[in-house]
Length: 360
Image (cartoon, rainbow, N blue to C red; front, side, top):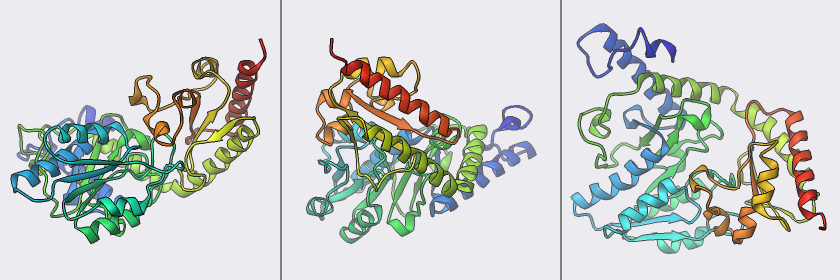
């Protein structure tokens, strides 16, 4: 990224001199690489500030484009466990007359495909289901959802922020029409992401003021961030399988130790989940005190960074009470995680739970 902050600082939208053409070439290379990585097409890649902006462009863009065409289909369908970046734009659209259906999930966090089939019909415009949940790591059955959407004529939007670079994703094979992602979720820079759309999917721009990104996202392209996103994605794909295998072994060791503590339960499906995620609820303890003790040793949370301290809506959707959700721990393992850190985490949780359960 470094040269693009300094000596190669030209605006890629200015095609009248060589430095700008070089910047434009770097952006287009990143566009092609990203499209190849997710099984999309380069002309369908729209660079954004992250997956939140991508979700807003996908959901509002599809809805407004349909409204401009006076299309009969207006229904929007999603799950109760989606990220706020999906749920909040849908609330906004519901206030503007678009019927929104929010389906529950099972106690394992997975969608009931029969229930989904019951609500996706001739009036459904779009279904939005994330690939991997940001809190509990659950992997939804994307191929089955995509096939259902194609069969019923509905678009399929997928928030892939937690999945791209960590699990294989092929848009065409899975029937995904719109896929969002963020650079910082795969060790890239913060402040950059993308929406990848299938050719022919109509979108209304949500940002005006220039013709960049095919007229769908006005503003000067952040070349250093885009180059960083591409580089991070290349690195993530290079070690994806080996990294997943290593982190799964570490995660399983962590879970086996925590499962041995009385009253500790797993949140989410035991098998259909990301290799580097573990989310557990600890019974019989005060959640606030638990996290106070743990933060001395660990960087863990009880929910999404977007929850602003409120109990997790994801865990509530799984049937957890406010107390259980507050006493939950989300572990995220990464490239830097080593066996010694797993040992330290086990010790920290074990000692914290023992202290909180000790009779007065």
